[in-house]
Image (cartoon, rainbow, N blue to C red; front, top):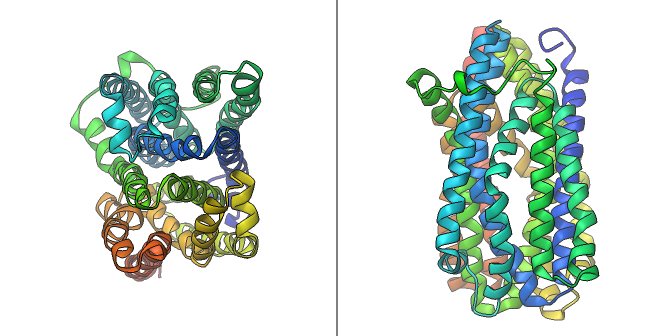
Length: 440
């Protein structure tokens, strides 16, 4: 299927479950933000703090997940199933260990960590409650990211979808019961997330039994040999960098938004959730492309990689464009749905309208990054992965609010998106010319 099916049918088939799982997962995030926002503006601001902590766990999960997945898809394309299993086992146990380390350190320095992520004195009690439960389930969440990516790279996105959807739907069901039915408030939201992440881990782990996958997790296959662990770290480093930037970016944004109070922190947190929900579709389409690129590159089918990339960029841009209009036209209503506070709506609506103008630019940027990572071109992928929420965003968010005030804060992410697109296209054009010459 990977080496012969028409890419116009293959990529949508692989992308559909990934898009569905990404949408539901992000709808859960949006729903979680909605329930927490019922408590108050400061509680709503805690969502941005928690989002930064989740990005830390994801950073390690995607480091080992993408690092192993890219190697696995290329080895399966070359017929080396035994080698693929070694990469799978090594990444799984490394993820559990790194997640446990983050949890222990986080529990020991809970308040300083919350403040480092941008918590104010009024937000801190809510952030502390939520973060405590995320730290409990963090190692399982990290390992789940690995399993999800391995399933995708094997071309079994439907199995990954089952695990992710189950956890997300369970979380949405538990939120109102625990938060309001049992009166646990923000603690209830944290417990619901921890329970859902544990359930998702158990379901995903079961997918690797019964010979449904080429990959298995066996302690005896774990190795720290440079050819395996070193390759996982090298190939996965773009994901680590991207997610580390994804953790630092909201931290800086929260600190800058604090100049305008809890309402601004809550508004930018809501816009971040909405923006991530929209980009989830684009990311899902790109993730459907990655195993096709990896398999065919490993099998020497450069022509199919080019064809798959053309289709993926065109399809993703079309889908992204369909979200831009509603986000721009209904920005006030979207923000008010989360938190009907005039100060939150005024700040968030303006930021969301600016974000809508760059939605389409994000997809080619994401696809270029995913292409280089799937092919094992780690240096180029690492550079690109740090641009949107790192090299461009950091100086912009630190300087622009001081120069323009609140509009500078609202413009920071869209400006970083536009610059990232321009630089990504330079990288892509250079790779495309070289690969096209080899195909010809």
